Length: 265
Image 1 (cartoon, helix red, strand yellow):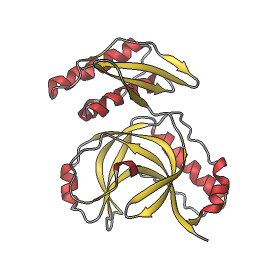
Image 2 (cartoon, helix red, strand yellow):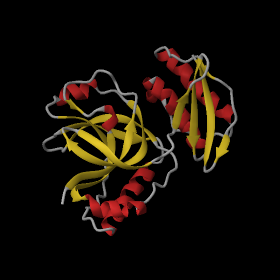
Image 3 (spheres, one colour):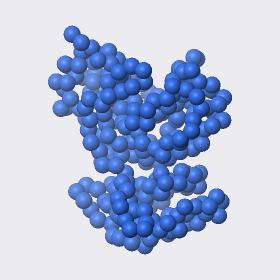
C-alpha cells in the first residue's frame, strides 16, 4: 500500500514581489491556503469519496490582502508566512473549512476540528531571518481560486491531483490601448469589491487606501468610487491609471453578475 501525503487547499494568486529576503521559497504556483491536512494516507479511500466532497458556499474565488508576516509554529518557527485579511465575507472561508473537515471525518479520516482557523500562505521555509522578513513585508492584494487536493512531493514542492474549478473574481482580457477585466460577483457589492481588487493587482499600493465597500446600485456608482481611489493614489504616489471608463452594463450569467471594466492608461 503506497501512501500519499495529502491536504486540501485553495490556490492563491497575488502580484508576487520579485525580490524577497533569503529563504527556501515555495514556487509561486505552489502557494496556497490549507483548509484540511490529512498527512500520510492510503489514497484509495479518499479517491472513492471525492465525488461527495462538499462544494464551497461561494461561486467565485475570494479576495483579501496579506496584512502581516507571521512565523509558524510560534515556539520554533519553521516557515515564514503571510497572514490573510479577507475583504470578502470572512465567514465564507471559515465555514467551508469546518464543512470539509466534517466531511473527511464522516468518510473515515481522523482529523481534529480547530476553532481558531488561521488563514495564511507559506512563502518560505527555514533557514531565514525573521527580522529581515518583517522589515521587508509590504501589504499585498491576494485572491483564492480553485479548491485543490495537493500531494506533498517533498522539498516544498506540491502537485494538484484533483480540483474543483472556481470562477476567478476577475480575469484580464485584451483590449486596444487599455487594460480590461471581466469582473465576476454574486451581487453588486461583491462586483464592486472585485473590481477594486483587479486594479490593485496592477498597482498593489492601492490596498493601503481601500475603505469598506458600501452597496452600490449601478455601474456609474462603482466607477465613481474606483476613480476616487485612482485620484487619491495619483496624489500620493503617482498612479499608472488615468481613469476607469464609464463603460458597459452589468449582465447576469447563470448565478453570477459580470461587468467588463475598461481602464485608461
